[in-house]
Image 1 (cartoon, rainbow, N blue to C red):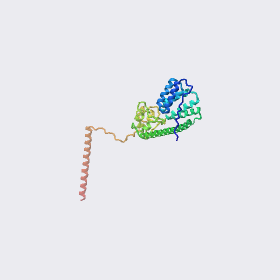
Image 2 (tube, rainbow, N blue to C red; image 1 turned 90 degrees about the vertical axis):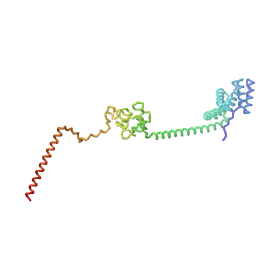
Image 3 (cartoon, helix red, strand yellow; image 1 turned 30 degrees about the vertical axis):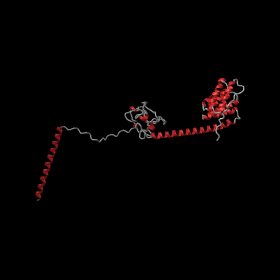
Length: 316
């Protein structure tokens, strides 16, 4: 592949120059330039401009000398100044050609393409400029493809990082209320909002055990499936963020019990009641009565025994 043609046009001092010394310095500068003594040529061209500061040849050749010293910005500024003031189309074609070269080495290929086009508009027969234009267009396409690939890779990396973060955060429960942080970092419309702070107390919901500050812990109001928190009144706001979760007009904070919570089972009504305490006198009377019953029982047993014995003797 051929390299880009950096054909810098060196202009000689024309016969209609107003100053003899200007022509002398330009000739000296051209000699130094051709000998690749670019710093010395820059000095001579500046001397020429000191004598005639509007000299197109002096300004153009100075820009070429700066370019050769890799002072690209200075050279570009010099060429762009000439492009604004020069009216001769042949001269303009050379100026734009060199502007295209300056942009090319800076890898500003879009600007380089436009400069070469301007050169061809002023001189359609310039084959070196046409070749450089094709080279710049190819480089521009490669640059755009590379940038597109970088953007795609960047988007893919961002998506991967986001997925990793989601996987890492999945299942985390910073406030221990049973509701995953991932769920509490959403607003009521299901959109991500890690700054969701229902009660406005400065503590985000995923860090707040009572997100709506109604006195009922989020864990209680979340229900049996914290991944899909309960919404009793179906208004789109889960109970743990709803100050009136049953929409009965009475704030949850004023209701003694959760209306959705099953009442506690009643105590066994068969449960024995504690006995009243017996006085000492009553206890003594009870003992005496028991003893009396025991004595009467013994007497009856003795009579029955004696009667049985008597009957046995008669039968004998």
